[in-house]
Image 1 (cartoon, one colour):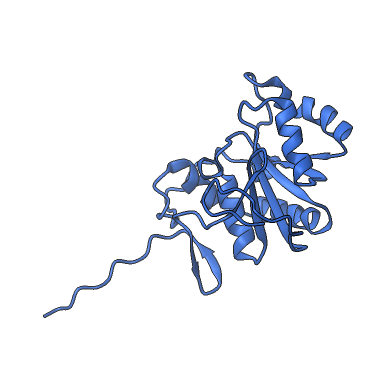
Image 2 (tube, one colour; image 1 turned 90 degrees about the vertical axis):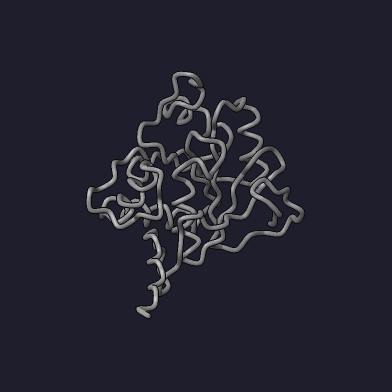
Length: 197
């Protein structure tokens, strides 16, 4: 699937590769619209990557409500709070390309054993069944889903954002991401050294 911008329209109906991960944000969408977006992409598993899977404003997206409603659509609901956001940055962080404290904190958290274990669980799921990761923010670039997408893309996965009904977008790396020696890196690049003379 292709798209020309962050919110590009998918122009092809090609089957994605076997190593594909989708992402979606529930925001204040109507439940029927959300369900249709999952159906359009053929999603079989919804991995909830919210650390706290509740929504007072949109109770249809609480973890409890989704655990009941999604199986009726043929979609398995898998809570994955160990991939959730709302993490504090470490004082000694090297992920300085992120100016946003929340994203810097999440980049730090991505280096921990609990995150790596949860990420591997997600990769196993997504390798076997069409899986979308879900959080609250509709725009992926305002959500930690962007960092999860960076990690999977750096590992050779195709990552597709479900933007709105009928619209998808391939994941470009986030602005802070660099690939250094084949690995994802969020350290700010060193400024070039000035000549001594």
